[in-house]
Length: 60
Image (cartoon, rainbow, N blue to C red):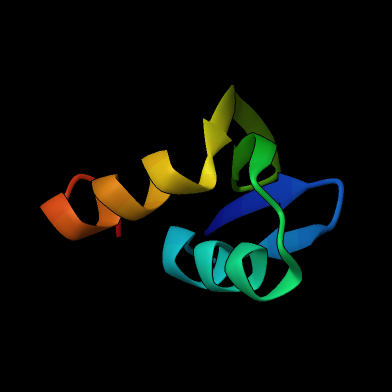
């Protein structure tokens, strides 16, 4: 199970996280990706980067 943990919540996918960021006016985020309770990676994104990656199919 993939979890995307941020300071403003935990999400199951980038699309939901992007929607939340847009609704709340959040422009940047640091994401810790966890898979089965193990931290896999920590990344910094802007809302624009997430939206572009979703549109191109790089993120789900």
